Length: 88
Image (cartoon, rainbow, N blue to C red; front, side, top):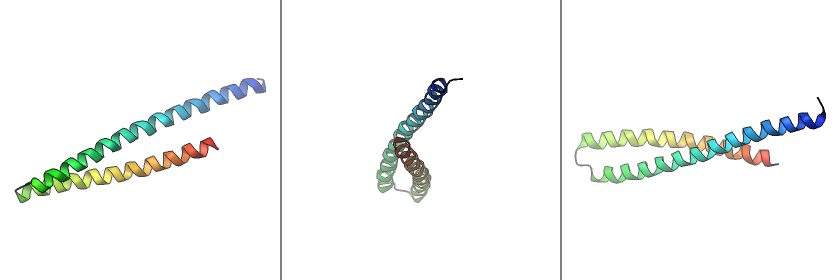
């Protein structure tokens, strides 16, 4: 196989990987935005909650959302670093 052919195949593979990475990055951003909106909604609902049981349910849900959002932000940061690294 000639060098040009191998380089073309390599470029195609890397392009596909980059495209997949960009798709993952954008979908992750959408999910994080939705989680942020849900967190704000639940915080507002928590201030209006009347019973202690209802407050506990909302608080536990907020903890789960916060934990998932932190994990997502960590992954997003890693993807961003990889993306910047690939540009160089």
